Length: 148
Image (tube, rainbow, N blue to C red; front, top):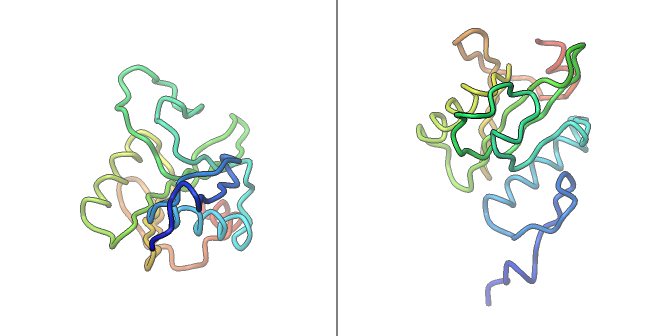
């Protein structure tokens, strides 16, 4: 018998709530765990499952598409918090559609780093102007910030 999603939920440390166990949510929670425990991202600077209209640093609120990001890590600047790393989670393999979706989100967010993650793959890129550069180092929070 398969486990019931409602009976076996996952705890999200960012949302501080139980969430339904789905294949994509398992990918998201595994990545959040690595970000916080291994790569030392401050949990207070991670946003999960937010609508574009909810992002505090986007000046234009009207006219934004109804889109929900998976994970967005932020960092502090003199002007306030800014986007650092935008991540799209997929339950299965990464596709061209996944890449287009991530670029569509980042058109509005303008994070200097973007990443795609699935249960078997994690790829991260540094954005400079409109060019992508693979980021082959482990994505430690302080290391990423030092590359901006």
